Image (cartoon, rainbow, N blue to C red; front, side, top):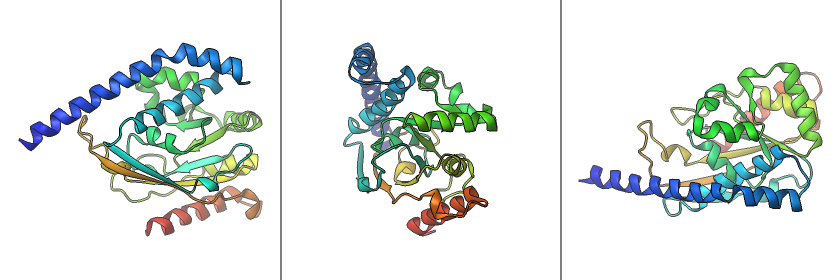
Length: 245
């Protein structure tokens, strides 16, 4: 009986998400017109903000199925871009990351995400970086270009989702981007996302998500020699201490 009830709740919730997604996308032409009238920016800027707002819209309209709190907004650098790093416990983290109040984020993703037809067009229009098909030269060029446009970068430094809930070892890409472009790293620790989605889609569970935005870490705090690696170790330590690992 409980399983049947939970199936019905999931069906209703997914139907609701589908409905509000259709309503949101129907407003896209109006949004684009208003964007180019009132803001200065390129088409990919418009779609990055559109994607961020969509994730934010979905999460907020999922209450009370999804409840959330955001702590540490005051730690977000006021001017310029930053490298936002998040821990990765759920396949839905890219939506939950929209709770970080930085609208124009270039998300660094793996190749498999581009194989999801429903989201591929939105990622391409937003000019997200497919790290599996990006050379080091292109990585540097992208960092330099978008830094000049005050676009922030979103990384999951663990590389892939943690299946056991514990923090995985960090990779260096996010910290290389920060070091090369003299950008602050903004550590964001999300908890509770691992309870939302199980491995048996469409079983989605009610959850409380807490987004903790920690103080930024600046490249200037480290010596130039092997700066990216030193930043990686320092930020990973911050995460482990915060999570009690």
